[in-house]
Image: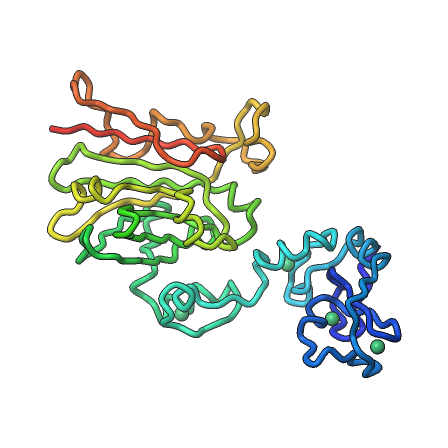
Length: 318
Ligand SMILES: [Zn+2]
Ligand SMILES: [Zn+2]
Ligand SMILES: [Zn+2]
Ligand SMILES: [Zn+2]
């Protein structure tokens, strides 16, 4: 059943639904906009009276995405729609440079975002010519100054956001890759951050994890340490001449052969080829080496407890 429409905005009804004194039911977004609370249809006062039957109906109804006319074909049970709208790839989106730094007021469609970046923020576009790996060097950084860097990347025709942050209050540095789109699709992509030391060629840290959707607030992900996190005291060893270098790799997640754990619920990619992610002992790149016979070889697993995550840190000190 299709969701009933709100008589005012002609959009599918959303809960809670309030009624006016003569019985008109308005959607939630129309109700909260009313100031003073007068019914736009009959000019009677809006009440706190809910329309429970209609709310029940709306919760079970199938509604098309409000961005249907822009090309979205998603149809959801109405109560899930609110979540979808936040991550719908057909939504109008604000330039993330505006959100992060307050330096841009552009808004538009996702398919225009990459061109907008190339045009207005060329320094924040990662070099996407070398298929899936990008090398980054951030200049003028130190572990005693807060900083935030933001890049847009493209892989497999999808757009990703890479955030790097130094937080001197928390004494932590963060790397996060977000997939622009739904949470479900985000989990079909895996990112790998590899931080290399210029002074010590063998000193490398690699972090592998699912991408988060861009509908998740990056600051919240940082706050909960759900991404690559490094203590600043440690990061200091990777900074050389006020520069830090790291590589970012994005790859498709391949469904594990055994579906007896939580992962299988979320990762639903139909990829048939390739090894299952993440293979701890076969991290790509020339610098990931486990020094044979070296006495100082320490594999650690630190980080967030929730979610299927794998991470690896190898320290091979000379
Ligand atoms: Zn409405
Ligand atoms: Zn009314
Ligand atoms: Zn949509
Ligand atoms: Zn912008």
